[in-house]
Length: 283
View 1 (cartoon, rainbow, N blue to C red):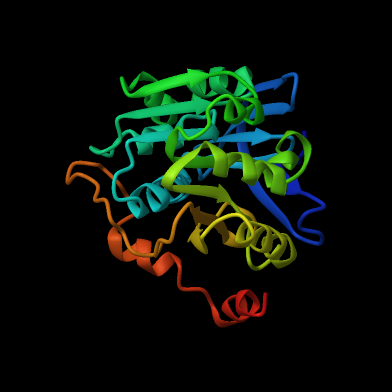
View 2 (cartoon, one colour):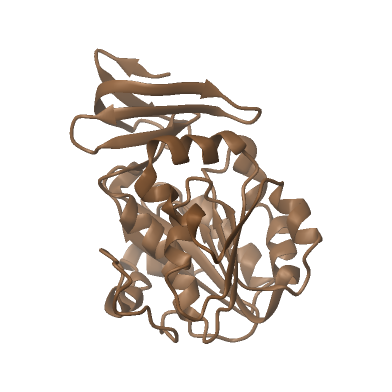
């Protein structure tokens, strides 16, 4: 794992010439699952950190900005989001957020890697608290197969994937988005991790064009998060049926205990800087 002189250094071919670094206090866990390398360390300033295949997945300090947005943007965009499926997200952050909605009756987590679940439960109690919610069911399975077995089932599908390499590469392919479309009920909404406009406009453009051939409404939104490359990450949000996804239709309860998301932030997340908006307009 890339720790040099007490610093974790994140380098990746997906962001050439760019690196993130966090100072390490103590390595708490290192393991290798059937799918990926897993590491947890305690950092000097961002709390505990989960690393998969050398890439930061989240830190305790800023995880809420990502978890809240990838969950609440699609759920709030749906007028009656009763059944939610989360693919990936074995750390438990997305299911923690999804279960906060009064209208949500069930949340299924489909995670392929048991080690990610076990690691989160041991080292990240504030994330893994979602596993204990009575609305939540966990399936340790391949997301592709799970979608095939559940047509016309879900109101919201959230894909909390790593970057499009290794086990998550297939989650960025058109065939996967078609499977999700079949698994949605009419009016359903999907939301997937969709990289950064500062680093990955080519990947985002391919994804956007593919989604436009499948879904009736397709929009890109983003959140800010300091420990992800470029300090920003986006979401591709699509619906089976026409929907202004930037306008919330479902409200969180007053006691939801959110730290980043609100309805104004929801609307603002879809307002892109001019260079990115112009790029989408040209597609």
